[in-house]
Amino acid sequence: MSKSLNLVPFVSVEHMMDLVLEIGIDTFLVELSEYLEEDFRRWEHFDKTPRVASHSAEGVIELMPTSDGRLYGFKYVNGHPKNTRSGRQTVTAFGVLADVDNGYPLLLSEMTILTALRTAATSAVAARYLAPANARTMALIGNGAQSEFQARAFHALLGVDNLRLFDIDPSATERCRSNLAGLGMTITACRTAEEAVEGADIITTATADKQNATILTDNMIGPGVHINAVGGDCPGKTELHRDILLRSGIFVEYPPQTRIEGEIQQLDANHPVTEMWRVIAGLSDGRADTRQITLFDSVGFATEDFSALRYVYDKLQGTKHFAELDLLADPDEPRDLYGMLLRRQSILMTPQVA
Image (cartoon, rainbow, N blue to C red):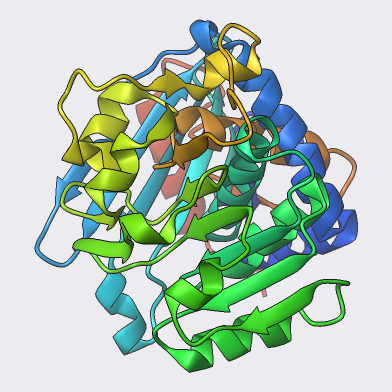
């Protein structure tokens, strides 16, 4: 990368796709999971705050900042379920990684694709500690943009090779099945959510509608199942019946955020939950026994985006998968910013030689 002070590496969508494909999707997910686990283990080093959200009737726009004292990162992300009706993505994002010592950005990156990858990798990391031993069958309810990434992560990190798919839109299920064909997984398209969860060790819910929905009812959940609840990620948006929560061991990222945005917004504020970082760091137990229902109430947290940006920044070294943006003013004399403008004016006024 350039050493010029005013040039900032920018990873476009095309760059990100090329980087992921050069590394390999499964390898990318596995390596990213290592960065995620490393940062969860040093959780106490991070600045932590619930994301700053601006809600509207149609969706939400959020900023997700954090720092470990050496690096600073933030993500801009939206969530607008209606967007698919106009050909737009439900979720889009970009992010910045910066040097705390001088405040200069080190990286500006697309994060729509990267968020899908980090969300899937985080789900699989949590399942390593919470899912039944030797789990191989996963029900995937909600076959939208996140579904294939979840399937690839659970396949790469846990060896899940039997998928049971359901979506209220059969064409979404067919797209998901087609996209995952040839990867060594047995894939069954199911007619109902009830059919999808039959025989599943892991149940992943990843629906998009911004409403208090009941994707899973209490009678659908038997003992020993691990639930990976991905879709409930803002106030007023849930996927699980409250009775399921009361029967489950609940694991979360950052309680002050999850109690506002996650499935546990349905519960009393003092209902016990376990922070996932404590499990990964060996300070708290994960799954207690073979019959326990475990729930990872995943809403996404800024440290996960930080891990993803940090991973991408490291993997960019020595590649051409970025452009350099003239983003920062770099005057000859740091205090003479106005003089820099005058010099530019002089250049523009100088007649150009043909």
